[in-house]
Image (cartoon, rainbow, N blue to C red; front, side, top):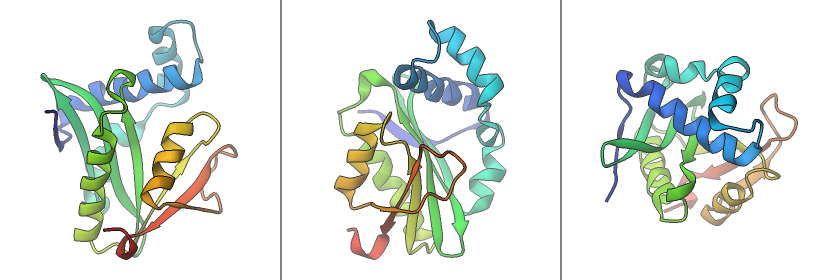
Length: 166
């Protein structure tokens, strides 16, 4: 069974590659994965992962990775958004391991950390047009739509009240 562990500095490039791989699958931005990664590194550089210690760990959260046979197959993070509100970020799983309950396991660990940190709610943003499975997953967990709070006009905001989720 895959392990979920905190991201280590030497794993940042591999974690970003997982996210870029899933994005390429979802958005079909370029013909090849390598072309997509080159494009994303310029246009969507994921600097928060490069400095995950400051952006997540020191900002009231964590950055976790799912590892199987020594390679990262998924990622997920939590950080402070507001005083008692955390934000779930970067919850991505490689396509070949989706549908096996790994996203649920990751989310349960992130929600446990959110409770430990004293958050009463968690929020996230997703794109229901491109990320239909993720959107449906969040709804099944009890997340409900809230006004968009990010810059991407295609994203929707979602929120979960932690005391209602057990």
